[in-house]
Image (cartoon, rainbow, N blue to C red; front, side, top):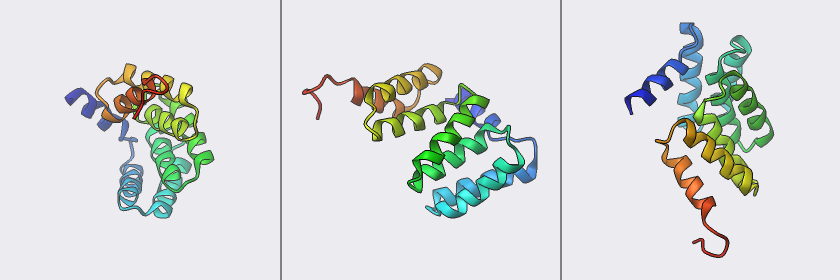
Length: 138
């Protein structure tokens, strides 16, 4: 998936070393489970780079991890406004919709994400899970 890696690398570059460092710190904090620190770094990033979709997407993930679905949804909307093909954001949106019980919209979002990038195990699993006819699921 070299093309996928290349696209993700391009998306992660803001054009500023300082802002890229904020993204890296936010993502590292998120990986470490430090959601408050991640949200802090990523809020600084979105404040200074409001047109940088990856910043909004990363902060959405941090908000969701912190159980703050409303702010996560708002950040996903901004990320997708800036970059409609940002498949990680579409997939996170699908997962949030699925968790909230909106299976139809979640399935549509998983399928949309797979239409942009068919090489996503999480999106493929979500679409398969929601495509199971009622009464025939696990």
